Length: 168
Image (cartoon, rainbow, N blue to C red):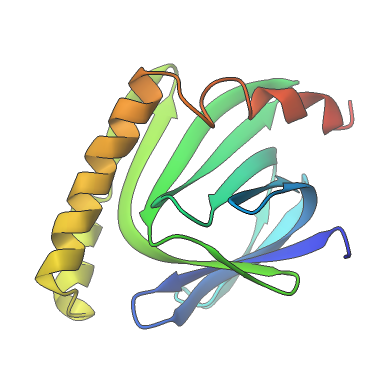
């Protein structure tokens, strides 16, 4: 198994949305943690652009849960968390993919907030999300908020334990 893992975010219908390369930190039957390197290229197919990401990230992708976590690391500390609500991730070879359902829950400057609700409503119509999927995404957002408030995995220090893997 190689340490290089490609992450692919898909839109509903398995349409490639964006992708980037990471380094594997931990793999279990239920999840992977990866490290996004400073200066990596994010290929954004929807926007037909390539972005350079100018910070390190520790990222979590679950094969069971309906969310991802990306923790932006600056100066050895987590500066913000960005969580996607999505269908559970899948791993095929060295590629992890997930269907992004647009709803995001982020922590910036210590404050958690829901973002992209407008994008969720727009894409629910554009991609014809089934009603059950809309309800599930909304429920999974509530579940994620509860998980964070209870400081349960991976918000129990599991992400922070990888901070030492980032070069100084």
